[in-house]
Length: 218
Ligand SMILES: [Zn+2]
Image: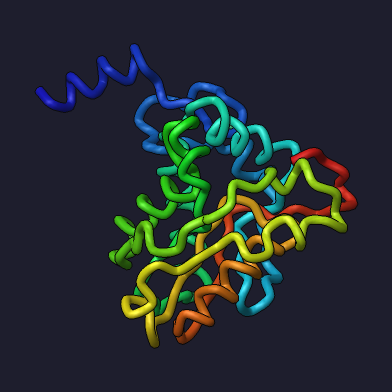
């Protein structure tokens, strides 16, 4: 019976690829079509403390934009799964907490959710690593990094993050999650704040990595 209901539901609401929005054939329990899966430019040469799943290009960019601005909150599940698969592939383990790069609370209220936190929540379910929420916070509502010149990005995020409960993360290994790695300034200051608060190791793990010569708007 349950099978029948699922079959009917998938006829009415078929799975769609999170990248190209094409319908995925019934019976395939996936949200990435085989064509996009072949075209995604995965990152294979990570630096040690800065891991990314794929490059930010025409295929992946629109999907992330839909997650961020067009309420496709459920995409976070598939993105988290891609991150989890990468963790298994490169044997990334030994972390006590997942912490997400925080959005300012005013911005979160306006948007209704924080995309990095949505990904973090799903990744926490898959990995069983506890999500440490509302500990690292953004104390200033800055302009989005995409609206600031390359040179000013460091200044824009300096001093905007704060750890509220350092005792929780003291001597812990942290997996720091964000959706897009741009110049690395945001991640750098989050990492610095976590380290200053006593974290032992902080590994930055983002979904997409921007390559500037690809000349795409973020
Ligand atoms: Zn596709």
